[in-house]
Length: 89
Image 1 (spheres, rainbow, N blue to C red):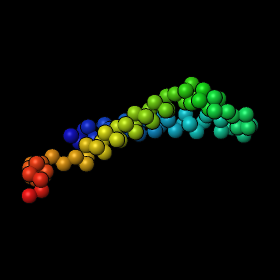
Image 2 (cartoon, helix red, strand yellow):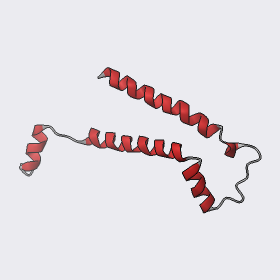
Image 3 (cartoon, rainbow, N blue to C red):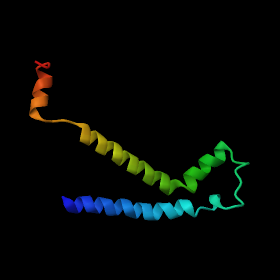
Image 4 (cartoon, rainbow, N blue to C red):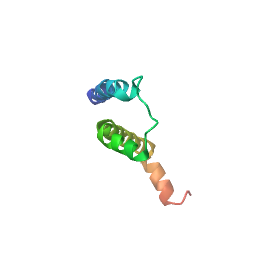
């Protein structure tokens, strides 16, 4: 069980090592970059072409977080299940 936890941490750290330089070194952040002519169409095209991989990875991470959160809040102890079935009596 500990190996899986460590593997998960290593994978998240690896994703950060890959994604942070991609985002930080993007030409958009250069001094000569201008956003004056940026339209919603240009933003959508940039998001789906230049930023496709980070958006996909972010979506996977967020879905994993939501699945993990729903797993953590469920309560399947027999006492609670019986209490719910009996109407709280």
